[in-house]
Length: 79
Image 1 (cartoon, rainbow, N blue to C red):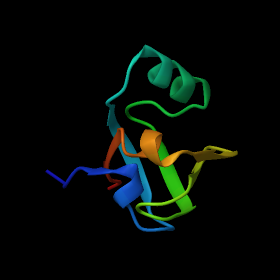
Image 2: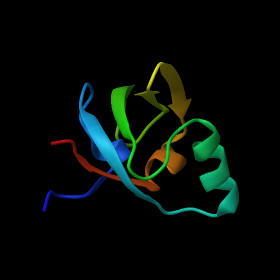
Image 3: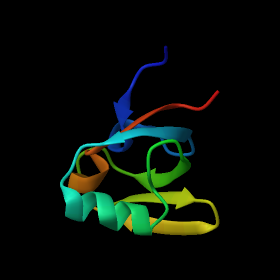
């Protein structure tokens, strides 16, 4: 089994699969509307581990997530 990290801990350019979202209904609904949900692969375009937004690409959509939300998204390496 691969190691689980938060989205904010992933290196820029890595493609990962969402495992779980640790947040309330509002956070989960917001991410689901962006196409980010468990089982979906996302690519981290850029971001800093402790500061600023994390930019991710999900399908053909690119969006910036705040650091607090990106720390609530558990991911694992894609195989």
